[in-house]
Structure formats: C-alpha cells, structure tokens
Length: 527
Image (cartoon, rainbow, N blue to C red; front, side, top):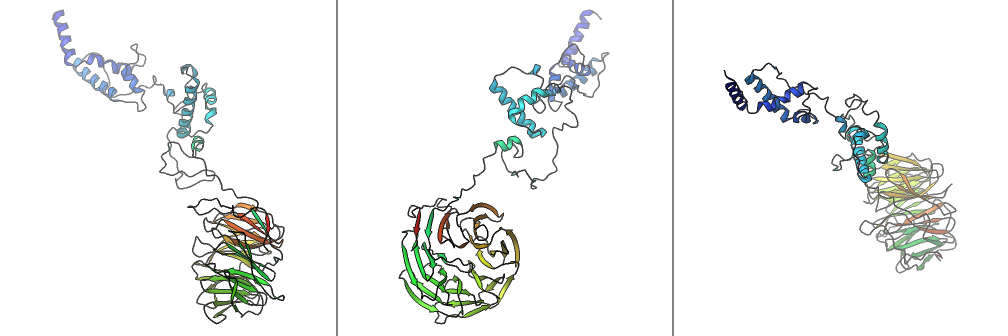
C-alpha cells in the first residue's frame, strides 16, 4: 500500500470516529497525572463537588469507541477513575480560607463582606463559634496550618446529622421555629446577632402618682375598709364614717356617720356600682344608695363585727367574727336566707367567682373553703395555709383558678384549681400576705404585704416572676382596690395614707397609658 493510500485510510478512520482523536486525550490525561499535555476540560470538571460530570462520561465513552475502531497499541480501561490530585478543595468557602498567596487583593469593604460570609458558612455548616469581627484574624492565623490539615479529616465533618429533636429546648438555647424562613440558625452567634430585638419589658413606676391622707384608717388585719366602684368612686371607711372620693372630679362626699359606740369594719360595692354595703362593729349590714346618700335598709344576723362582704348580683354574703357566713337577698324582706357554718374562727376573707357559682372564704383558723351556691356546707376544703387567710382572688382568665395568701406565720401565695380540687403552686413571699388582686387585662396579679417589709409586688402568672416591688408605706399594706379600667390600684395602710399606683397595662384597644390629668398630683386629704 502506498503512502498516499495509508494517509487516506487514516483520514477516513478519523472522520468515521467522529473526532475521537480529540477526545482520546481525556483518558490519557486522567490516567497519567504527570502528563505533559496539562489540565483539560475533563480535569476542570473533576473539581466540581460531585467529582464526575457529563463531559467526563462523554470522554470515557468516546475513548472506548476509539479503542475499538483504531485497534492501536495503547490500551485503556473501561472504568472511569478520576484523579483528584489536581483539585484544590481549599478554595471552597466551606473550609478554611486558602493561604494568603492564593488570595487576590481587594478593597477593605470586600474583605469585610467576604470575612463575614465565610464566618457565616463556617458557623452554619461546620459548627464553629466565634465573632464575625474576629474572623479575619482567625483566618490569617489558621492559614499556615490549613495545608497541613486534610480537608477530609474525620474530625472535620462538613455534613453531619444532629440527634437533638427540634421540639426539645436545651437550657441556654432558644427554640427555633421549623417554619422559619431565615437561612441563619437561631442558635449560632450570627443568628443571635441578626435576630429581631426582644420586646422591652414594661416599665412600672416605683412611686405613687397620688397620695390621699386618710385619718383614722384602722390598722387591723381582719378589716376591709376600701373598695372601688365600677363608676370610678372610691369608698373608704374611716372610724365611724364612710367617705366617697370621685376619681373623675376628686370630690369627697361623706356618705354616713354611725353612732359613737359603733365603727366601720367593711365596705363593698355592688357589681353595678349603684349601692354600697357597709358592715359595722355591732354586727349590722347597712345598704346605702350612693348617688342619693340615703340608707335603704339595715340587716342584722351577726352577733359581732362584720369584717368582710362579697356581692353576687342581688346576693350579699357577709362574714363575721362569730365564725358564720350569712347569705342575704337584698330583694327579700328577710335579713338572710342561709347560714354557712364551717369556720372555727373569724371569717376575714370572702370572694365570689366571676361566674357566681362558687364562694371562697378564708378564716383565722387557717382554712380556705369553697362553697356551692346551693349547699350549706363547704364543697372543698384547703388546709395547707399555716396562718389566717384573708387574701383571696379569683382569676378572670381561667375558670376555677383561685389565689390565696396566708398571714405572718405562713407568708405564702397558693394557687388552687377548684374544678379538679388540686393545689397548683406555692410561692413564699417572705412577708405577711394581706391582699391579692388579678389584672383583668393581662395574666398578672398584685399582692400587698405586712410584716416585715410592707411592700407591694406585681407578679407575672404562671411563672410568678416579680415585675416590680413597690415601697412607700411605713406600716402594713392592709387594704387594696383596683380601678374599673384595671390599670390603677389604690393601697391603704395603718400609716393613714391611700396611695395610687399605675401597675397594670390597659386594654389592648386603648393602649397602656393611663390619663391622670384629672387626678392632680401631690398629697390631698380625703375628708
């Protein structure tokens, strides 16, 4: 065969193979890492994270086709074994930054952005901790030993599983919603710095915005001499008289004056705020029309002083030192229609539930009883208190939730579920608990105390964390009432002062700021 025919035959074979001479260099370069031809497109594809690509697969198939058609002396394997020695995984941002010799010079803003982005990737994927501001110096310090470390070391797991469940919150970490759209985890340093700021806690003024002088306000733990009506009128029992103070106009009205041998022991407004019940030291209960300053009727039945009163629609409950509780229907001519007997000492606390189905009573016998409106004996008895139970308050937010406080020997606030007859919680306040009142706007309550700190504490329920501790009274804070809007409380003590505090937020529709423009600041006298 002539040289011309050999050249023609080689040309035909090359054309029939579809450019196999170009693709045959791929396996040669991949099989021999020291090839003089240098990296080609096939070796660049090996640098991808997956290590194989469509171009590399095409190169292998074309090489096998050339081998069968050409039949030359060179033999190539039909298996594709990539060689990664030419790959440089250190350039990926998932690992440490490459050495300074391989980094391009850039402006200071680009360096800061690159450092922050690199720190973000290392934090989210490698679990490293550190501040983004110090990531640049850390990268420079770690650049020297980056090449000595293998990127595939067993201790450098790029992708690893976590065994902790999403719903399990560990101490010191914040739970992250599985539906969060943020690419940054909430438990990382960058996640915490990029998270939205927490809501600032509500500020409660530590001093009263108004003080009223209340001469002859008795320093007696078992009396209840202050009550606030739904019409924003404050009733205060001072000695033998009852005074009405209007919070809207600051006008003081003298409602009644008893005989010299008698005194006021308790006052209580009806739920509509039209009538006021007055308990006396001689055991009488008087009903007064506050708008007309006229006494409607006098009801007897107790043998000694009436220290506590509680309304439930037209039913008035009165507790006395004679250890009895009388149920009175103000519409009926009889003085009372039912007598509740159970306490072994003076009854000093009475409160009806918000649904008017249960009556809670506390006594000097350290007992807390729950009475049904249709029974004459207590349905529930709680005897855990070790001192007199005067402070009683039903929660307006949860059915059957009752809070009670004990005297000097007890000092505890206890919570009960009357629906399940169970004790829920007990908090030692360190002082005699004189009064309790729930906020109707938020799930919080306020307590007033006597011996030995004479403080007022605002609590968040159910954590029972202290929101504020208010001081100012020099004697036991024996009396407490809350305003109709649920924002302001008034406290009374044996120091003969009434102090007004803004402790609770208002309804959400009205905001949390109370308007005290009518309530002039300073110190005034109630009579």
